[in-house]
Length: 586
Ligand SMILES: *[C@@H]1O[C@H](CO)[C@@H](O)[C@H](O)[C@H]1NC(C)=O
Image (cartoon, rainbow, N blue to C red; front, side, top):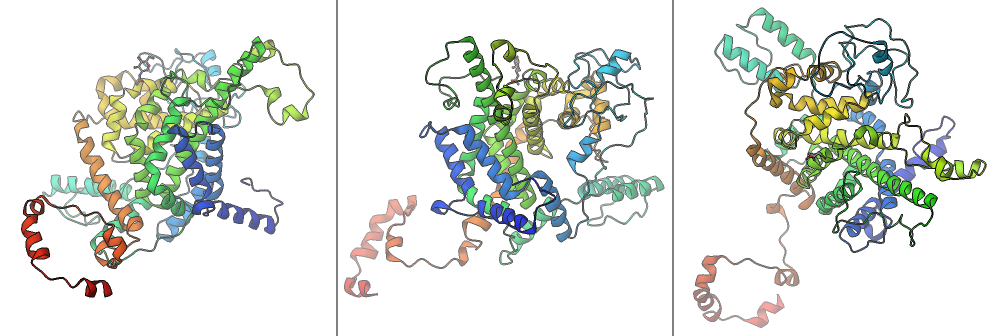
């Protein structure tokens, strides 16, 4: 379904598109397949249906959404179409493509990082080994040099190749960005400093500012990036000011899914996080936690060594697949909702944060992550299609044990990258959530994750470290120069961001609630306006004059009424003649 074939006829293409559309449409009980599956997961987690094969339900849910909404590649195309429609220039950069051209760096030393140019031959060779654990080796500003041996997705372990001459000035991989807000702030500061004036809503006037500032403004303007989210937030503000103006809502697959998920979205998030926790490798099984192994464990425990080994592998594989499906699902939903409407994304994010997603992911990475991406929990002779195509091979405890320690478990690598991207999505531009990264001491945990020599994974780890550098203090930065330089080389630059030098000691975790409440009220207004009142202001809703429904309505009585109800009863009921026959005839 999801792979385009060059020889697909137009009829086949049409059939595929129709299938994808139908998959997102209401079916039984007026619910689309995804909602049926979400509800199965909630039931499984609250114990009312513990016999459901939860791994399969999760996989099916993820794939259903992948087919009906599209993959991240299609999302990138849709994003550019939407940008064009909103009058914004297209954004050609595709994260996966950019990461392909970034070279993974050698892991920083465990303790202090030094910047001497020593590079042994061994170190150069290790540089091409994604799992090199050499703590001593060095990396100067060459982390960007590319060579034919650059590990790429699909070929984790490239042949060791002699590195050519180290190139220092390689172009940065990402285009720099500036928000309009940043330019505004920059102009406000410089105007205050040089002219002593405030000028509102003017990003052009440079009167009285010295030449270097003109240059600076020119550079900033060249890198301005207006996101769709900013446009959507502005539109929301407009609609709030003029409640009668309704903006058109495009009926996309994401819109339909969000609308049907909305009533139970918090429960879905909680259930999925519970399952993620139960499947995390570092998690110790608690007596009250959900049992995710019901559909792997046989009725009778194995008696032979071979069978025990097979079962152990199967249990681990089962958990890995659950993590993969949940992390893939979260990322896919976050990204599609973000594109469709920023407040749909914020609603889902907030529920993930409230359900402790941030510490959970940090905890997930608080394991030997290098070992996790190298596990080999599969039995190749039992894998499809090998098990049907190849000669039957004798399985023995010995053949199970011999595994190549240099192979990569792409399943787990994929999960790790997804979880890092989710964490990035939740914390970006959110001060209070960035503070959570610090409170839960994520920096050393993330630094350890850099040992996995995979460019894309490192980029997302470095982004998370970059967010925090301001708060970690000068001493931390001085002793982590290699990490700092890796951030400089690999993470997008925001031109006015002083992440490397700024000292924000004013880390205010107690602002957490204020920030989340402000966001919450925007999200609630958005949801109420679009989904709760069918898009109408409650004042304009038709009056309910159905006797049955009025009598069934629960009315909250005020304290004042309760204290004076006898007077009211006297005056309005006992003191008046009511012609019941007349009333009932109406
Ligand atoms: C990480 O693991 C170590 C040792 O297992 C433990 O002491 C520490 O509290 C953990 N940190 C987090 C954030 O879970």
